[in-house]
Length: 282
Image 1 (cartoon, helix red, strand yellow):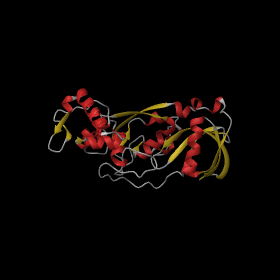
Image 2 (image 1 turned 90 degrees about the horizontal axis):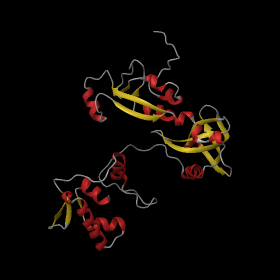
Image 3 (image 1 turned 45 degrees about the vertical axis):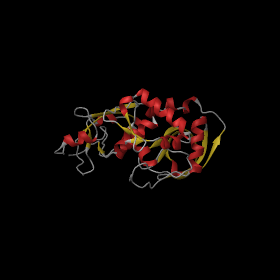
Image 4 (image 1 turned 45 degrees about the horizontal axis):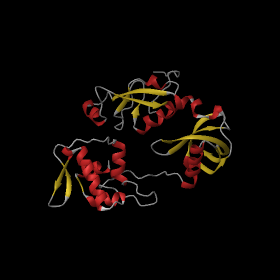
């Protein structure tokens, strides 16, 4: 797959590339190239002047190349060693990250998720201040601007999101979660919403928006957990108002049926969302 990745996105691959990537002797790299040529002879041409294999005019990928993984690889490299400095494969620019979890906090949380154990933490809340809690974490959530952990909170008796940067002094507790604390009992996590996104009605060129989001037909349909739906809509600046009333430039998409969010606790984060239970005076 690496060989085809180089062909597809760089246009060429040589024995030194394969040898350096996998620590192979030249003979091993030659065998890999020969095998790929057997699998897809129409994809690769040999340039004798530079002794490099180049993409052919008839190239058709034989492996799946997922866009997010491809863009991550182009931006950060192949991740050869987690303690090495990342090097992009092509010139790439991306927004600076302003909020990163501390590794001495993230690591114990990850171990607890993997081992299915509870964690004692000190947590700083914007609403209630500092508190001691025991949580049972089961998933990490990328909310776009910061990372959360989804967990059962023994203090409140509820499943909640905890911002990882607000967690201090995590310590694993050697007891197994109760049945009621396991993720299959988190209704907001297990409930899957089907959302239909359309170009914002105020736009004069909806066809451009359809291109931006690779819409097939008039809309883009996605499936998302109720627990994270509000984060997703906020991250992508999707107008969730019932009357598409948000007119600022960043709102290029509208949630065609805001009632699809009904009952989702994260809906309050969605731009413009108004609960159907709340009456407004107009």
